[in-house]
Image (cartoon, rainbow over all chains, first blue to last red; front, side):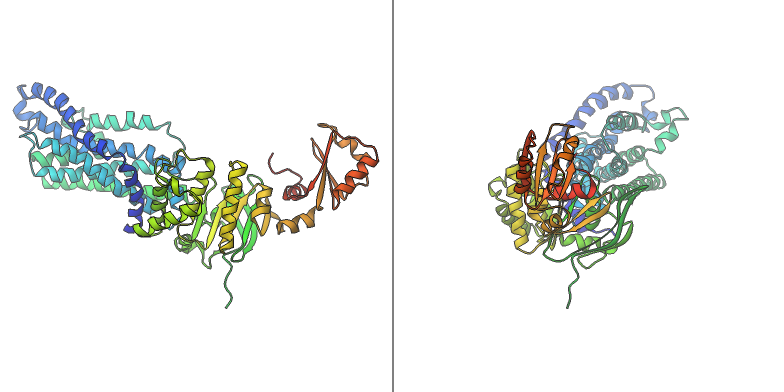
Length: 261
Length: 309
């Protein structure tokens, strides 16, 4: 069922598009976290780190380290999340590239896998860009950044695949801005990026647990600044993988329904 | 040893929920033939084509393509098939060459082989000089030719063309017909859907007329005309809505008469003789002309409707 060669051909099409934009993507992957860190990390950080609870609140980590490590997870979420909306619908609705693909030996599952392979590259660049910036700071310079980059790739897939499965059922892009505004941005706000989820009201805390971002953030933070037990790490990883695998299966089904009707 | 025809269907049905798109058709297309599905929009042509193309599951009936069953061997069948879709499915932001090379890779061709094939096919469709330019600024006819070139990357045994010239200007249509004719000369089996009568007459050795998901007639273009109408048609116009009242005046002229809101059609083997008789009776229509009967007339005869309404 899973066959790598045809999926790589699908990825070949994505690469042809990517070759036209890679410089901008690469620069953006460094520049954007740099701006976030200067704005939020250092600005809010000076406020938090000088507060009287600084030693206990973030388990002793500086706010910059706390916040910056989360960006390794959020950056691929934004990049792949957006890529799972318009570019995917394009394949079904505008360029009809996916319809063309399935008239060849390619199957819907190859299309999904090929897209996922491309998202691995996009995830590596997005997470790797943040990790590169984090090498500049004493608090975050760690071999764990490599591991965190891997987690970032998983976060990208954990968003991209379920979202692509849903996109494949759409007949227009009218609802896409709402997905960003009321789905992805709130996750950014409530998944423990800016402050520990324990700070949320008790009833809101479980919400963080069902988002893939929270698990990615915890893993990235653990990988770079430590303080994450193995047991919890396994749970976080398992949830992320569940989103990836579940999204892959769901997308294979919705792609199949749309392309082989 | 007898070879199975590339397309064999019996009792083929396609349903979408309560809607029956194809209501049980039987077809057999021998190797090397150019076979047409003719009919108005919604006749079931495209649904049939998608089943033959192994991208739409058969609801009922038997279908064998290139000697295999699409239910199990879709991938292997598609490997030997070329598809020109109704609407171009090209990547407008990529170059013409990239569109071909990327597509050729879907058939597991090596990069070098894909580039060689792309160059050969661009030469065939006379777009070599466009290879490095993006698809977006090309004309409709040029895009269609890119689509045709793309459908040929795997040297298909069976070529499916879904309304290949819809939306093209007459000149571009003729260029395309010429290319399709050359392909036929090379022996490729072609399945074509169209709602253009002249296209079917130009391209098809044999065709079926579909209406409401069923086949209502089958034969060669000339054979269908001979069987269902006469060789020539006299079109007379007495003014919109005033044609029927003049029918009695024309009694006895021609083989058969068809009344349309805007004109009367008189079918006869000798159109000029029929027209002379109209003149002899001193009937003076607003206009009158004699033309060869076409498949359009066959369709009108069989379904009582014009094709493009």
